[in-house]
Image (cartoon, rainbow over all chains, first blue to last red):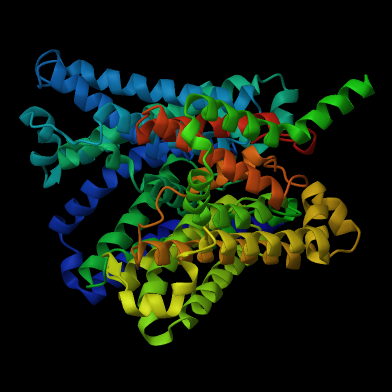
Length: 321
Length: 318
């Protein structure tokens, strides 16, 4: 019993140790890795990914999964850019309304996702995967396959203005993370996510409206995907269907590598921060040590398999589908 | 009461081909040219790579799992075929086949031995296949030498008595898959696993081996799909087969193999793929843009899953 507790405690810190070892390793190979400039670069690539992964965390905490992010991010990015440009092109004037507009789009897509999953009783990975395809199609239809440029200096200051050598978008993402932490730890709905993930039948028997909580989880996820979309647009100054590409694999990898179990009920948004940093440190480090960055997908594939393997409580699992 | 249940159940089994016939008649009424034999043959030849991938996917869905790596494996296969062609000739086909088999087997091992859910394990293995494809191609589109292509795979293109050769290849593969599914122990075991995995385990079947086999076969079929596609387009690139995953899953489910497995099978998927092909063609006739197709198929997928899934197998829907 005692032994089990010690093991659990060690297991909790494994992702963080992995991150430390990675940083030390890349620094040893190339000392330029350990510089403020490079860390700022990692922060820029991590910020949009962190928001998307945090959204996915809520859903995974419930033991479900959301694979719709590529579509949702694309739609939200396009909605944001179109609204901003139509409302005068600057956040300083009425253009600010593009931000709530994009968040609303994310929330609506999340709600549709959650309702399909709960009402039609379809496994969430398939419901959300289908909705992801629909979202990609929708964003293509809206843009006609074109790119939308954004040159509002105020909006671009998220990338261009630095405070203590980190761009503003890193602080924006940090703010998002704190909000997510508050939702997770200090609100009823956050605790309900854990209750469902820990044991759905028990949660239901205690009188929890499981379906409603699930839908809210998917709505929250959609809103955070929208935040990720806005930061992704800020990073490149472009909104297009491609804005969402790659987020599915990256964010799911980040969440599980961070130590949030796919079975639900364990982990949280801080784990996801560590996971996102691990994924982005690997991506950045491979370039810094001179490896082609497309090897990243392969390395992440291996990483995700080992992370899921290590985190799963196989005692309660007789077979996997 | 039981009569009514049996009646709807019986109708459900015939639903796929009724849908197909209705669609063909509907499109035929709007444009009679659609029904001309050469048009139908062209239509069929066009979807051969998709059909092959969907056939492999069927085996995995049949046992109640899913394979999200097919598209990446097909992508990798187009690259590997193109690269290996100059040195191995027709042997490059065999090489690609083995590579697909190996990647599929890895998905199977990870799913069964490490108990990682199949949608995650295949997603991860897909990521690895994508990397291999990008690495091998140097992230660019490659082209086959026309003479070498004719020499090694010339038999795959062209027509005999008006029938495209790819169609014959596809037919042989369908027959092979159908034979595995219907006439071999492996196929019967797949059905047992799909119908109820715990029962299959309890009856002493070595379920893990057969599951790995299903994943390996799916990987192999995905690789063959990539091979045929790259011969068809005379080249390879790590994104060549992009856009195959959604229609492949749609084909399996619309054909009547539910996500929970156990019923349906290869022949169903042939009908499902034809439905996908007719819908695509009719969208061309109706001038619906390509992006509209993706939205439509995404929605069709949701409806198909919702109407075929066997909810008695899922106490909790996660």
